[in-house]
Length: 111
Length: 120
Image (cartoon, rainbow over the protein chains, first blue to last red):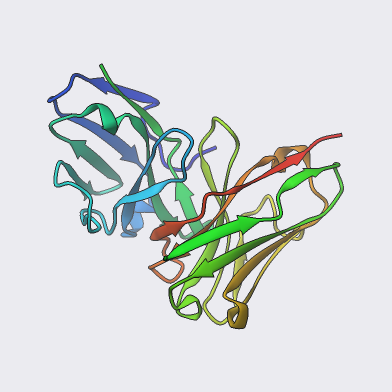
C-alpha cells in the first residue's frame, strides 16, 4: 500500500497541459522531505525526471515542471507529446519507514 | 559508460535463497549510497533497502527485514542483495539504484533490473 497517493490515470491531447498530484502525510512530504518524480516508459527502468521538488536533471525538457506545498506535490507537463506516454511516480523519504516511499504511479495517456 | 547492471535473478521455490548482484561502471561507486527497489510486473515501485557509501549502515523495508541482507564491495564496484526465506510475494523485478541524496532517495541512475520469481 503506497504511502503517497497519486491518481491512477490522466490523459490529454497532444499540445495540452496535464497535472499529476501526489499527496503524502506528515511523515514524508509534510515533514519537509524533498519530492522527486520518475518517468517509466513501457518495458524500461524508471528515469529521474524531477529532483528536489522542482529541479530538472540535464536533458529533461522544460515542458516538465513540478512544485510542492504542504503535504502535496504536483507534476505538470505542458505541450504534451506522444512520447510522454508513460507511468509517472512521485517519491519522498519517509521518517516512519526510514526509507523511501513511492506513489502508486499515474498512467499518462496522450490521446 | 556510466551504468548499473543487475544479475542473479531467476526462479526459486518458496523458502529458498537467491543473491542478486549489481555491477557499477564509470563512476565513483564508493561515494554513493545505493538502494534496491523492486516492482511487481504491472504494478508500482517499492523501495526495499539501502546501504551507505562505506557499507557500515543499512536499512530495510519492514516486509524484508530479517530475511534480506544488503552489502557492497567498493573494491569491486558491486552491490549485493542476499535474499533468504523467499516468499511468493517477493516476486518482482529488482532494480539497483544510485542515491544522490545520501539515503534521502534521489535515484538518478537505475539498472535495467533482474526478475526474481518465487513459485513452487
